[in-house]
Amino acid sequence: MQWSDVVDNPYLQNLPFKIELNRYGKIEMTPASNKHGRLQAKISTLFERKLKQGEALTECSIQTSEGVKVADVAWCSKAFIKRHGYATPYPHAPELCVEIVPPSNSTLEMAEKVQLYLQAGAQEVWAVWENSRVEYYGKTGKLEQSGYGIAIAIQ
Image 1 (tube, rainbow, N blue to C red):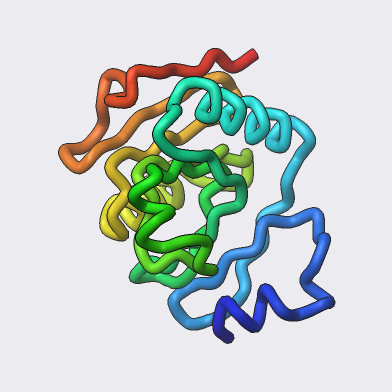
Image 2: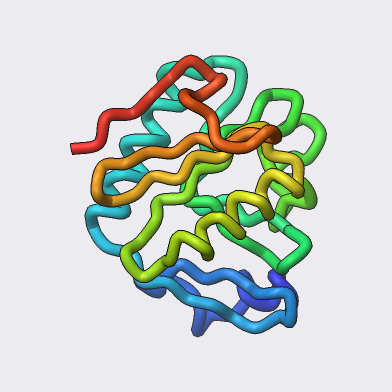
């Protein structure tokens, strides 16, 4: 299955799940909670307010070496948007990708997704855990703080 098949399939529209494709073209689904949606909105709003030279996207599909993954929130510079427009999925990751980690995801799954976004071109990846922990990752590994000069407070 290709990502365009997922996007165009009327049966897969408006589901209460986050849908991604693995490297074999099979659908993987993760249920989304209202807390997840709240965090997504909060982070997107923060990016729009603080990072003026680009724009925030939610549910940003990205082609990775392991299939299409969907960042909960991404920040794309104006140069990225000029280069890729709103291609679905993006052939490269936007500069900043955020994953809001549901309780069903393991630490190993999250580490793999972080690496996939970085390999696909992200400059930084945030892992936002619903227990109020935020981890920042760059090309050199785990960071003490975001290189974008912003942080979020989860409550």
